[in-house]
Length: 199
Image 1 (tube, one colour):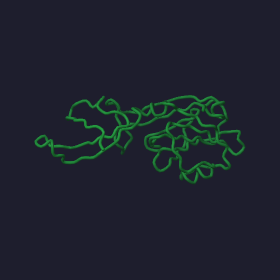
Image 2 (cartoon, helix red, strand yellow; image 1 turned 60 degrees about the vertical axis):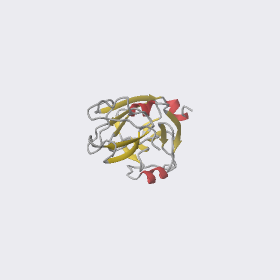
Image 3 (cartoon, one colour; image 1 turned 45 degrees about the horizontal axis):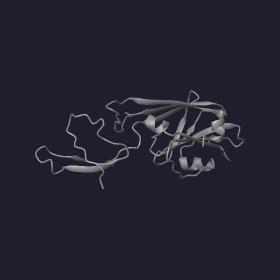
Image 4 (cartoon, helix red, strand yellow; image 1 turned 180 degrees about the vertical axis):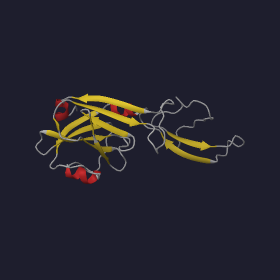
């Protein structure tokens, strides 16, 4: 069932009309017969207002995972995640970061980002770790992403810079209050939290 019906007339401001995590029905109607939709579809709004909210709200750092193997530059998420000894399918209820250690447990070979909504690696999302660009390999729905730095990193305080392009070429524009461009979110995780998690 549709939770909410909002009437939108071309040229009016949509800000504040849509609630998060709510199912809506959209209809295209003629001004001469508004009770008879020409076309209709349903959609559900995201739980978060912005990408920054997704990353920051109740962010979790899981304990570091010591991988049994190494991956070079993978292109297949499932094969890479199996090589690293992690589950191929998993769901989280908040943005979660896991350091993936090398087989010796002394350095970070990759990071696993997980989210309850798609992160859209390779199209909207770009990640810097410790100031360096990374390679991103996502699962099928983009909710899990391996973030691979150009070289292993020491187990130390680490700064992340995430850029999410609301107007990525070839994709629908994702405006927030009428504004496009890119959202940039930065945060630092200390070494103790990387090792042990924050839970």
